[in-house]
Length: 129
Image (cartoon, rainbow, N blue to C red):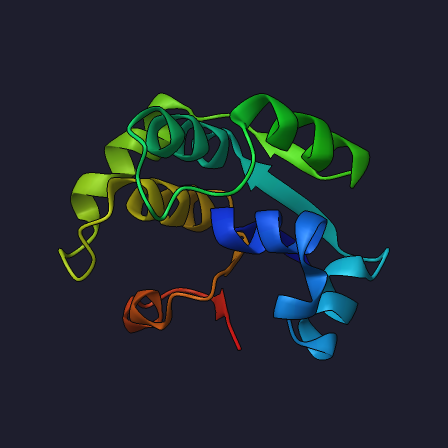
C-alpha cells in the first residue's frame, strides 16, 4: 500500500507516537507499505511557525525534514499536476495544505493518512482513526 501522511500524522509519528493508534502505527511501520510525506507538510510547518500560530507543530521545518528522513519517509514533491487537480476538488475543506496533499494522494494513487475526519467526506481513500 502507498501511504501519504498528513502533517500532523508525520509529526506525531516522529515525536509523540502514542497519539496514534497501535493499529495505525502497525500499518505505517509495515515494511510492505511505502510511506511518504509531502513537501507541502514541510511548507505548512514553516508557514505556521513563522506566523507564530498556536496550531504550529512543535518543531521547525528543518528539523521536520531531518526527522522525516530519519524515519525513512519518502518526500513527495509538488508538481503542476498536483496543484491543478485542486480545482477539481469540491470545497468541502478549505485548508489549502490539506487540499494540496489530498490532490497529491489522488493523483499519485495513494491512501491519505489523516486525523482530520472532515477529509473523509471526499471520495478518496482515507485512513483515519
